[in-house]
Length: 161
Image (cartoon, rainbow, N blue to C red; front, side):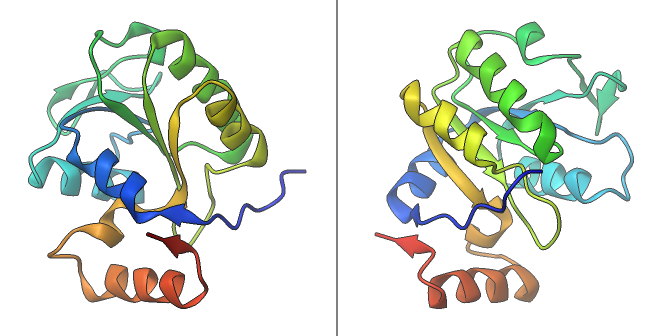
């Protein structure tokens, strides 16, 4: 059983991650109704150059899709990880092998990719990690829903300077 991670995430780490432009997106869905597809589209709308990873898709939102992190082009600034909790540590291991310096382990209202094992792997290998938040909470033009989630996280003490 995977325990839930209640993380203290640094806004400086979040700002650094979001300042990067070339990102892998692991767990990108080719089904436009899936939440990961919404996050993917929103990142693209904000100017991110995304390389989607999904072994069951050939393209996501018109972008060529990669089967694994190992198949990605070199030179990526980070990876957004939106996979089931039980798969997140293996994805982090692939990010380590690929030399990806930053990982965002997604957590929204539902399931989370942020597990103690995945977070520990990042930290042990010097990977800057955002462990348990949604990037959409941090855009200046975030919808009310995402602004409320950010506010709640701030009130619970889950964000630090």
